[in-house]
Length: 543
View (tube, rainbow, N blue to C red):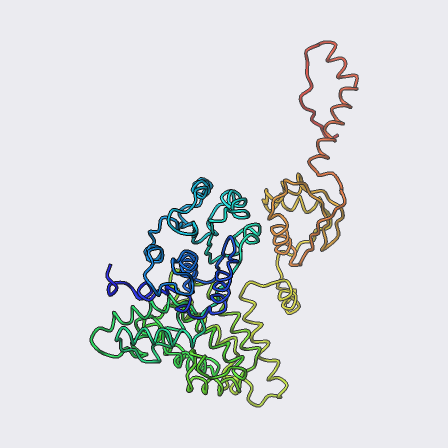
C-alpha cells in the first residue's frame, strides 16, 4: 500500500513521542523512565477510542528496542523500528484480545515468553482491547505479569478499564489518555488539511472537531471523508460539511426552542420538519436539543473563546436573549422529558413520530399560550389565574393512568348517587364468596390456598402468605376490591403467622368428621359385617 493510498489516520500516525498531541505529560513520563532504565514490567494505556493507545504502545516498543537509543529514535535508519512500524518484528508480538480471549491463547503467550529475544533488546507483548480476556486468561497471566524475565515487557491497551481485574491493574503502570483538547485537535487537522492540499473552511473543521469528541482518529476519518466528497476543487464549507456528516445548523435548533417556549406550534413543526428533511437522525436532534438546554441553563458561565467550537457569536447572543425570560424549572423539566424520549425512540418503529409528539408535549408542559390565558380568564379575579390552569391540567390527568394520590384528589368530586355496584365486604369469608359469585376463580384459589388471614376490617386486610402466592395477587385483588366497592383497600403483608388457610381448615374439619364417623356404632357394625370395607366419603344431611 503506497502512502497516498492510505487513509489519513494511518498515513499520519505518530511514529515518535514528539508527534503525539494532547498527551505530552504521559509521553515525557515514559520517555524519562526509559532513559533512566526504570521502565515498568507492564504498561497499561486506557482512554476513549482514537486518542493513541495502540500508537503509544508501538512507540514505547520502538523506544525500548531502538538500535540508536530513545533520544535518536527514528532519526537514523533502524531495522527494529522499521519492523515494529510494519508490525512484523519477530520479538514484538501484537495480539488482539477481542479475537483471542481464552486461557489457551494466554498459555501459548507465556510459553513463548520463556525464550529470550532474537534480535532486539526486549521481547514485547502488545495486547489490544485487553479487557476482552476471560477471567481464567487473566488469572493465568498474573504470575508472569508480576515477575517477568528481565527481557520481557507487556503493553496493554483498553477502552474499558473497569472490566480489568484489580489484581492485573495493580501489576501495571497505568496511563490514562485524555481526550484531545478542541484547539489542539483543530490546529492538528488544519495542518494535515494543508499538507493534503485540501480546501476546507475553518467552520467546517470546527464541526469536525465537535463531532469527533476529542478523538484524533475520528477527526482524521471525518476529514478524509470530507476531502473525498469534495473533489471538484471547491472549498468544503459548513453547509456542505453538515450535509455530509448528517449535522445541522445550531441556529435552526435555537430558533425552534425559542418558538417552543413562546408556544408557536406551527413554527416549531415547520422548523423541525425542515431539520428532519435535511437528513438529520432523530437521536442526533435530541442530543443536540439537550446541548442547547445545557447552554440555556449555564449561558452566564460559558466563555466564548477559541476553545468553544459549539457556539458562534450569533448563537451565543440568541441564547443569552432567550435565557433571560426562562425559568430554571422549565429547563430541568424539558431536560428530563428529552432523556425519556431518547429511550423511547429505541423501541418505536418510526422515531420521527416520537420526536414530533415530544415537541407537542413540551408545548403543553410549558403552559398555555398567552392568548388562550387571556380568553379563558377575561374579567375574572386575578387569583383565579393561578388556580384555573391547575384545574385544567388535573382534568387531563383523569384520562391517563392515575396514581393513588391523584385518585384520592379526584374521588371527592364523584357523585355518590352515580356509584354503581358498591358492595360491602365485612369479612374474609364474604370476600371469598364474592369471588365465587363474580367468577374470579384465580383470586378465590389464592385466598383459600396460599393466604393466611391475620386481621380483617373494612378497607384493610392484613395477611401472611406462603411461597406459592402469585406475584400479581395483591395488585389484582386491590383492583377488584376497588371495582366492587368503589373504595381503595390497603392490603398489607404481615410477619405474623395468621390463621390457617381455608383449604387447610377444610382438611382438618374433614379429618375430624372421618374420625367421628369411625368411632360411631354404625361404622363398627359395618366393619364387623364387611371386614374389607373402607370409608371413602361422608355426606352430611341437614335435618
